[in-house]
Length: 537
Image (cartoon, rainbow, N blue to C red; front, side, top):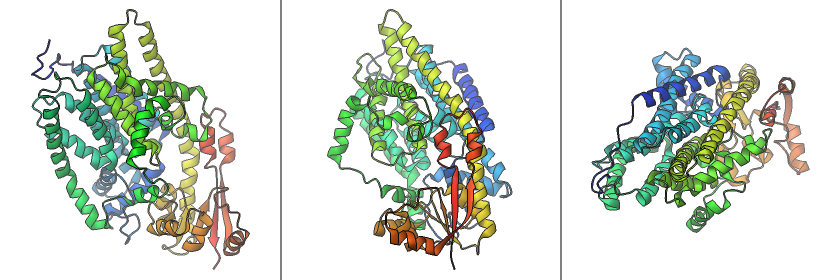
């Protein structure tokens, strides 16, 4: 028995395990990158800013306009530094160097998850399930290779969890560094480490937290001071440079999703376990990107994913589960409530998938200690890994086709606009900002206004009708999908047709139809047609 006055010191885990897991996870991510070559739309939004920084034009999307058009400081600075260091001659080289960093971070996150489970003294099977669910989660793998900052979020989140277990002195310095790294990666990272800290404060046994909650509170305060000191330079610089430390992307997205009051948030948190079997944001955690929004996937995957998430959300009620498992269950509920009240995008969910993986592993560990026959918990673990792995394989095929067909089409649209522009200052109204904005290098009046304060101002004044926004903004070009410029006002329709001419159609529907096996086909079909309009002069 360990003393209640000393930190828990289980046998030191083998170094072979984390190293082997690191290599395996890196191999999976690299194979995914080579097979799909996926480059996420939002990477090119951020990379246009990174490239301008490398060229000496400032940390801006449009030269001369100081707009905070990215979310992750680390996600914009690293590609910019890489592009500058390599002379800015090859965007391909910049992406692959950045990919090497994100793949390493993803592999480090998986290895850290394995290390956490071994420090807790779990059996090899629950440890393997937890690490296996992280390394085979379709969104975690894809967003760790497609140019997004997700892999760093996973790594710093895993290190934050591990640090709670291995800081016997309760100095808080290393924990504060992990928290600051999360904020540098995503400013909303405090929602994740805050939920974990709260859960650990509730459920940490004395063997892990010498001095009890009072000492733990002191460690959190020290960690918070370190975190604030490390993040404050960016906060102050961004405020000085852009006039606000809040990313303009957050402002643009937040117009449609105002946060509810505290009573509503508390009610959502308390009732979440009772609502988790019905459809909700938790359905997105373990499924491929936009699988439920567009369909085209077997219906049963939503129920399998929901079952695993339900286990994780209810785990804090299990007295036989260890303190960390119950703490992470609370953190998962906090994160789900948070994402349920904002506009969640697919790359927001991998941190939640990591929490689910660790909690499910902890539940299996507790079950194996209680049940006489391990068949049932073993079957759950094997089913979970098979489910996650099969979705990863299917998603890789889907995203390979997306890269080949859809992303190639968007790049072609950007290049066409650049070739047919009247001047470099031509403005374009559109929704998919990344590829088209980067390859055209024109002034983007994107909806909802991620890089365009003019659009946000117009939305506040006019509303969300895109034809009314076009009338107010008067762009030179419009790029639209079928049905995006719909209004019941005949006068507005007449005005639009009198001021704009259709000049080019991009249609790849036949290429999508030619792919016989395509999971999530409607997701690609959503972007199969674009019509370009030009203003009459």
